[in-house]
Amino acid sequence: MKFSDSFFDKIERKTNVGKQTILDLANKLQQSDLKNEQTLREVIKELGALTGKEVSKEKEDKIINAVVNDKVPKDIDKMI
Image (cartoon, rainbow, N blue to C red):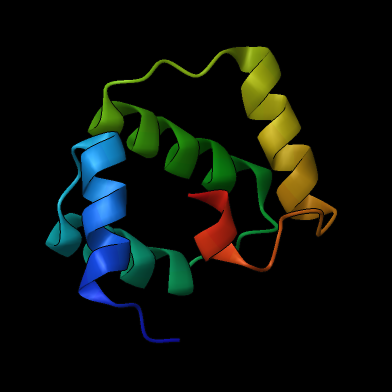
């Protein structure tokens, strides 16, 4: 999937995370087992640190449940 610069600009405006950081994280995610709870917790913590947002244990559990049970929206552009 190819994303336009405007897509990355939207993300950077909302998160203060640059395009290269996003691409590096995406590459790391492609090589990870996203059905593994520990891997997901590490990714969530890394994203929280990158964006300066604290993710509560409850929200972390909800995210993990959604990912493991394939309840994540497929259209990423609509999430932003």
